Length: 441
Image 1 (spheres, rainbow, N blue to C red):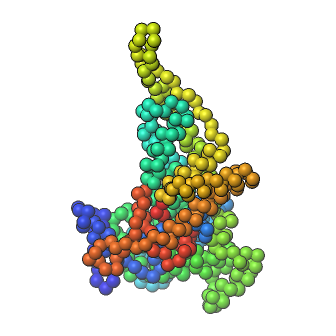
Image 2: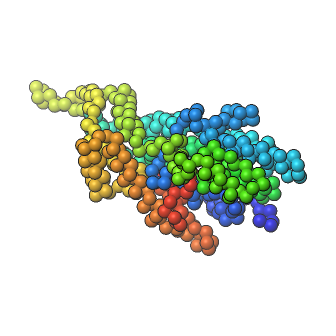
Image 3: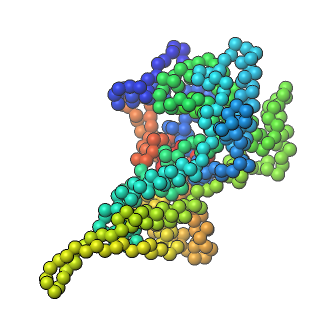
């Protein structure tokens, strides 16, 4: 950018003007070292190489706070180490030159870092339980747990795209927070919806220097939140950080230094950064989906029974040939057997992915039941996870670009599902972006 551009997204008074301003930011803000996780690399941080949704294990052994300058903020340990080194190096450059901190990032003090996925998900489930209960509590057809399930399935079909309830569904929805990955660090607490601040930041010479230095330490800059650092797990230096190897090459050629360091860890030399993340830092969400679904469904029914313990029906009285209103108390929970729960789980996951068809449902249900009968529950859940990952992969591959505005050549985007603010790109590769996977689902 040679001339200073004013970005007004988030401050306009009309939808048309807002749309044009957002498009302007998307078009003109594009520097090497940036990553767009809203419109292109939306899969960052939340999928493994097999397209399975993953979450970060919340453990003091794998996370670390920025002690001494942002004690209450942290990230995964290797990300925190990389940021600490970046911060020291950039401050050293400022002290020895006319360079300064980028706007609003004085001191490079982290304002936000890793947050708890479990807490965010729990809060979401509490909200959804109220939402679904409100749909159902006055339903006169609910007389027992069995009739509750019939009514609940009807509402799930209508609402799961907007209100996902499984861990996998929530993980890949716009309701999740990229900071749950432990790979993101925010250096201000500005409002991401206001492009005015972003424009001031990205057009600063100091910011351009900061992007270059961040790349040297294995970080992307989030294009749509330019005060946010995201770990670049493909970078060689970040591959050294995650292994705890020496990252400073001194006067030596860095590629030569990298190869020498990797030879010091022959046991894990063949592991990709994603492989190490998967084995130490992450867990697959599909292994927990059934248990969260069971708890959610039973909680909803019990809440309905608590709030409206009985329903009213008309009963015929033969002795005087009349009808009388009577109150009938709803029965307790009739627990489903495991195979019935598997059926329900498959239905829910397909609806969350907006990919339900009777044929696909029947095939996956039969496959999971057969595995359950032969090998047990955990392998059955793994089969369901694998089948859903195939669907996610197909959705990555099959979505095509659509024109945003007829009079704006080259500006394109794709469809989005109802429950998300993120957009699917046309994939140049069938591999999720490194960092794992924010999402369309």
